[in-house]
Length: 415
Ligand code: ATP
Ligand code: MG
Image (tube, rainbow, N blue to C red):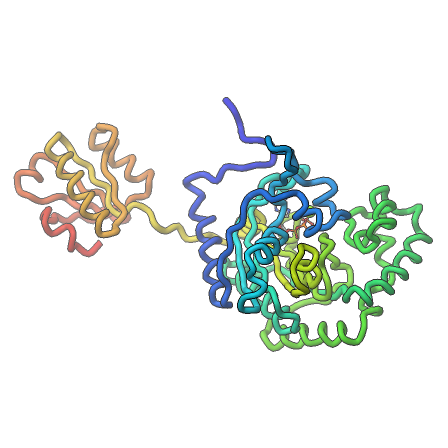
């Protein structure tokens, strides 16, 4: 037997309705905010992620599935959605179209990580990218969209943390102060953070190592360094979130893992799914489109991990309603009955009613057992008596209630 590769999972037929519910909810909520779907390729030229995610990030340094294709090109399976969307936005000239471009996506992502609860090598994201607007009202809107989505799928116990990491200018000053502080404590930092200090000091604030956390707890706070414009922008985001009744906490420790973030950054975090508690992360990325060869077009977005959403729902006992089961299962006995079942089943399907019939030549008892297993709402029994009088016996499985229905009337029967 061959099993799935480490860090990947099958979504089995009995569970796919949960995924469909999450995906349909994502689509519905995104559309109410005016977003349209984009589908970008599963793989891109590696350069898209080197430039679009950033060379100092964990994703680029450790986690990408990169290979040379048979033509000798360096190709990478997408580790996240934003860089590919930004590439497509430039590539297809959408930056010259109607702005803001409001885009959503549902995609699988690939990261070579150590698999554990909530951390897979292939996982799925629902993401939003709103491109072209820099006003704080769109930051608030993107956060509101994420919050609405989480609410609509049935999640109530998450905390929203927001922060501003300033613009290029104010971040320079902050980085200086941070480097000064961290350099004094360099001996206490983990080896990775010693390296980060040299390459991208902000990332040290993101480290999960306990020793590093102790040091960063007393580090200078970015909010004390941001310029007046960034400060006014952040205040407006908060004001609008309050207006929309979205509760949040300002947390100077939220910096996000990607290089291209500016100003607003945010995370929705749950206490109910263990160490991998971030279900949604996002932020503004005003330099990204230019980095990928476009004009200076600002943008903001987020990505939600669908596996973590499902985990959270399960751990907090929220059940997703199972719909779209079989309405009528036909249980024929004999060849003539089978033909009738085939004919009537086809008629119901043409009307859009999910139906099925025996394909295994089973006896009537085994057919009922099967109908029960697949959760059929009704079983329609057709035997020689039924053929003789032109009707079938319709049994409602929930309460065992039976009624006779003429073959010709079944199509109009209230089911
Ligand atoms: P983390 O800190 O958990 O590693 P991240 O900052 O790397 O998260 P993002 O790149 O912001 O994550 O991705 C957005 C969301 O995608 C995360 O909040 C999470 O829900 C989900 N996610 C990220 N990596 C994985 C993974 N390896 N397996 C499952 N879900 C993931
Ligand atoms: Mg990660």
